[in-house]
Length: 534
Image (cartoon, rainbow, N blue to C red):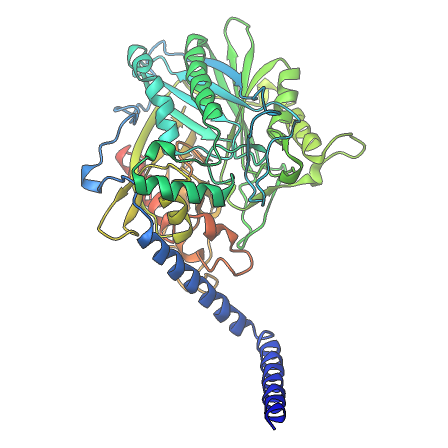
């Protein structure tokens, strides 16, 4: 009798299970039901991480009112509309390789892809480097430095370590602005800390934070590599300053080169590619800069190849033409490189051919077709407080895996804000640069943000495109991942559920107010410089 009863209950349970399965199969055909399920999943994840953050031991993060900014370079106090009489551009260049010679006997994690176990450098395909230009307009107001590292990103703390190594040198030589950005190369060495052995990192760091041993925290960053990066970058800045020569500065922007494609709604890309060109008066080696927006994500991290991706192969062509090279990454939030421009019949990886093709196209632009940049350099920076509301990133920060500058705004574990920077640069009377601390959505620069009917939140984006905030006739370009790396910078109304298709970026963003905070910061900076038009 007992067996029959159990059998009956088993059949009933099986029937109920089959019924539930059929019900779920039918319901999962309903997009609204699936979306609701994903939203509940995100809510559950947020609650779990918020709970974890309340019990994690606390890092020594200062309260906002106690924060004192160090090694922040504000730039020029005075903005000029014209050059000085007899004023002339001076530019210096330096490059230093960052390749580790001991990669076969030491652990260097590749930064850019989460793999389990984490990917390590196993072989070297090409060079990774820091490239620097130092620029002065001859007005006597001070020089500006722009350093770019072949890496995934670099935190505000590490940028300020580099600046601290240059503090005396900058003061002695009237350098008023030092800026460090990343190419966002996904096949370089981890310079942020989150691509190492996460379980080991979390276990160690929670224990050490609890003991107050903050010097014993570990991450995916190799300490010896980071020290060499700091040292070589600081030395390269000094070399670039000492290399400064008078000459003429030119640029050319082309917008018919289909080198990129969007991967996220609203599928907007900044198709422009800008060539900067400095020609020294003494006939010595020229310098070519390239500004464009496309992710360097060509290589499979599991293969362990160290490479600067397509950027190295642009440099290869520029060097063949007898010039030095520097690259600035643009607004590439979900923008991928378009391999479709590769000429047929060329050998090598697609990204190598791609880079060489871009390099050749740019070097084929003749000087007579380039525009002269009047010797007017204006640079201004501003510190910004950015809410850290994304519990995923907050947990990574709280566990000591990343070292961005942060402050407490209240007693709760979630009352945390990043201290970051935005910047504004004017080169001559036309070329304008906005420096942002992460991966910027191009639609906030060029237009095309979602309206209230299309957006995730059902709201409009209330700001004009950044390019329209400045005077007509000027050209605004983004330098991304500059002076900090805070993740993706999305318009607030397109910040959705990370489990929805096409919304991966939200998982690696500071939060839903990141876009508006950065745009408002730039808007205020434009106004403070007397340049805001709209």
